[in-house]
Image (cartoon, rainbow, N blue to C red):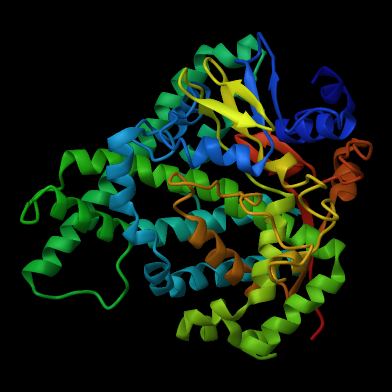
Length: 491
């Protein structure tokens, strides 16, 4: 690992280091131990779909590793779906599942479209001024607005104004150290803990107020026998399920236990959305720019489904959200982007009674951090033909074709009962993003211009010749926030 760290740019995401090791040492089996003491616990890296299934599918009760809890809980609280375990996790996952069903999310598409239209207007302004901007930051603000609206029925206006919740959330991200942090001052800086408590207090008070207001509005609608014509936000479905299961349907006050968990779940949705959707939007643009033939196919598909007049696309989606299901090539592109640039992966804590079996060998897991390593698995050449190439068609071919994905090998949202609850939302958001931007705007990486403006030549900092490599900033993010410039496409 030391050689990999020296060979790659600073802050390169650990999963890319894993891939480098596998490339340089093909003799290493896809299940192996790594001793990184004193930086972290001993790791068992799992870079095989069958072995990974033993971790997440056959042993779903394996607890999340404590390093993950310490990493995310200061950000999103302790009652979150990422680190909850056992019966508690099962209960709250069941409570929030209805709101994230594909059917219900489709009823919320109009809200997502409205926020994405605002995003396109911001792109218009950047294009008119020739402004250099960070695409990851702009996409994060879009995602925050969408999550606030469809989850809590609240307008955060992160794209157009300042908001104390968003400000505290983004500041909190800065104080989360890397899981393998060896800088003791950064890791134990007393001001960090003070600022984390301040930010957590701001977020919790803001969300407490929003939840009480939402509950009061529900009660008023019930008393007047009126109901909004708008689709219910996710929090309403979750509250309906909670009150029904706890036999509190007639309660006049919002249960404290629900409010505490709901606050942490909302922060979880913000956190997960900011890492998955915003970074994937950046790499979607980046990889399509590198493969103009794929971009042309995407735009052609959008013309066929929504018509060639891009100004009418937003209304068309709002009127018939199920048009988004008629985009097989766009969906394949998204899957290929997530294969090549997975935004995250999880780690589990080994147990004495859990042994991973692979290729006739047994791998005890006790005292180990088990890491089903998505990035190197997604690039294994013996599993993925032309593994480093951008080939969306691999998700369109039929079983039996050499390109057809091996079962369990594609896992950007993890597999098993603890898979990502919001994966359907990711697809919907990104399809809307594609339809409303790709035919109207040409968004290009501008790392060289950033270098000129800052007076720093970072051109040598690449991974496989690419400036937009992934770094560890809470999760896998494009380095530098993906500096970009945008121009309007000619009709």
